[in-house]
Picture 1: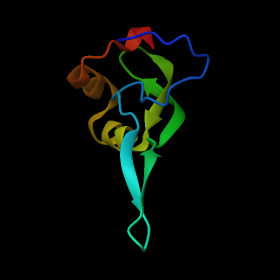
Picture 2: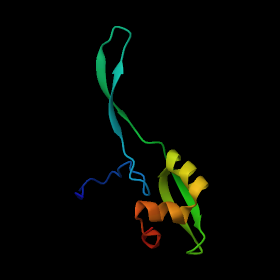
Picture 3: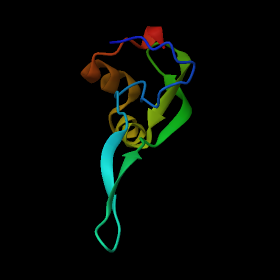
Picture 4: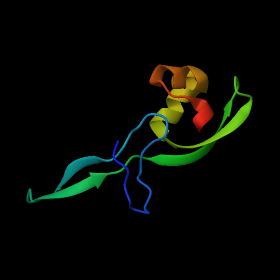
Length: 86
């Protein structure tokens, strides 16, 4: 992973790694322009039961739905994420 010298923070999900998608906006006359479809990121405090603490993370809404279904610990294990580092 390349370290950027930019001060600006990239829009990447902390847990799933979801990032922006390149796409095209197509007008009625079929003129195509490039656009960037950003991930829907939310800053959330998530309760980690096994670690007995709150974790603050920028998480996509799709990941939040999966965490509600599976649980934070099992989702992090399936993604290979160490929650102690967050």
